Length: 201
Image (cartoon, rainbow, N blue to C red; front, side, top):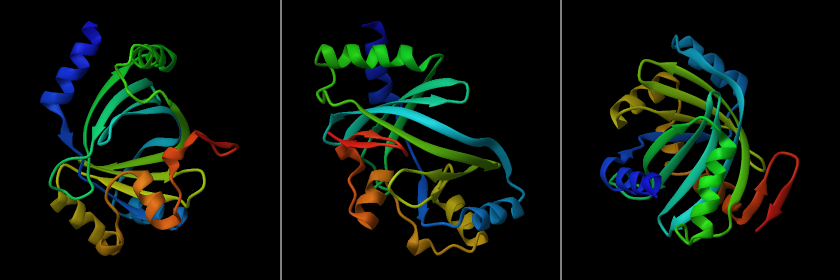
């Protein structure tokens, strides 16, 4: 319960705005070259993220996800002034399966209202330029997209211009928001979402 109190306290007090934008239907080879031309540095080779997601309420969810060094537990909440954007708070843990024991315990004891724990996989390659992150994401059922994250919108707009991308074609919000708008696919409707297999809830 101490761990739960810490999680709730962090959620209420220290959540940060995610300033990020996604550019869908990219050519991976071409966008990679443009990123490298900015002198960005690759910080993560193509990595298979494994994750469990469960809704906390209508506007927030909890995510357990693998990382190259272990795993992380993140709360994301749809509020804030940057339309369609999320607040988030992330904490890192050593072991993915250990994290799942915590999430399962919360669900069992009705501390997470949604009992449908969804499993998803996707590939990500990451580059950094100062405080700017460039993530090339590959997901089942949709085309690859570029996600750019920075401490503020001004930095994002500057680097979008340098990459020769059209700001108006960028999309804010979650990957599910992108999938719904462009492909009419609700990724959250899948209890199993991998490149080899997809099963609806």
